[in-house]
Length: 181
Image (cartoon, rainbow, N blue to C red; front, side):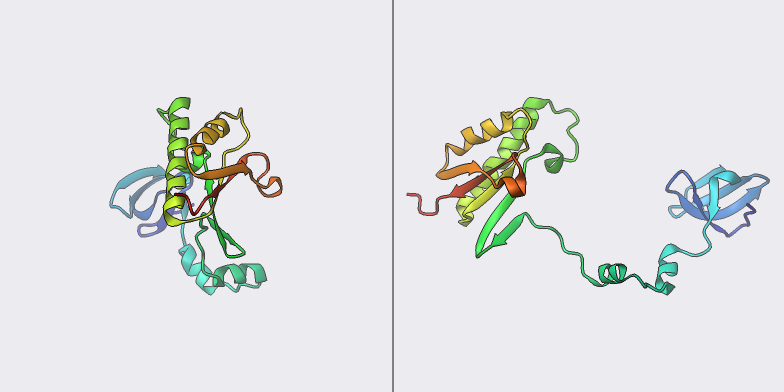
């Protein structure tokens, strides 16, 4: 592919985009959006004729599902589920949902963190008078479930397995007593 000075280009195997500032045979020098200068072989680059957002501005959306998705505002999924004037807090205790990386954490650290999150959520629900919590803990070997049950015994709550139909075997539903004295 022939490149000329001023062409907008993107690197095929990287996330670098920029403008061609020099062409030396098969070698192309590119300045990215941050001002960094790179040298690439011409085979590693692709020319960007028009930005993607410019193309989509002029495209005709015939697909009704695509049209609906572009017209609807994006809603962030909440941890709260409301059924029949009842607020239920769903808490997923899988460690991947709680932290970005488990690097440097052993199983004890992971379990301790999961239980700390569960403790904070129970205390939050007691304070805010939320009557139900569903802890999604998964099936596994049952260590988290048994430790969660031990933790829940210290609070004015009643707990039992959550709906098998909705959560499978790996969830515990907690009912928080509202008039605990």
